[in-house]
Length: 80
Image (cartoon, rainbow, N blue to C red; front, side, top):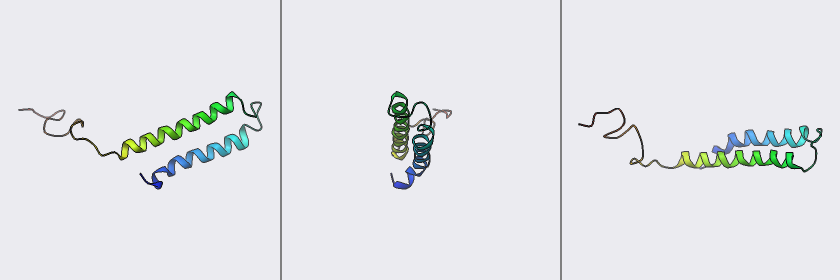
């Protein structure tokens, strides 16, 4: 994992925070810290956790014993 792999996450999260907390929420009836703003922050945090998990799983080396469709007796290949 390197810093470059988190560029797409930053490109999504930073504008979401700036627009949401900087422009939309302050001018709306839900301004302030309440269940809606906490939920919005929680959804952003969930996005960060999901992205980080996906990047870690994609960077993991694959185990040839667990792969499907490849190898000597993979899916769609003759076994004799």
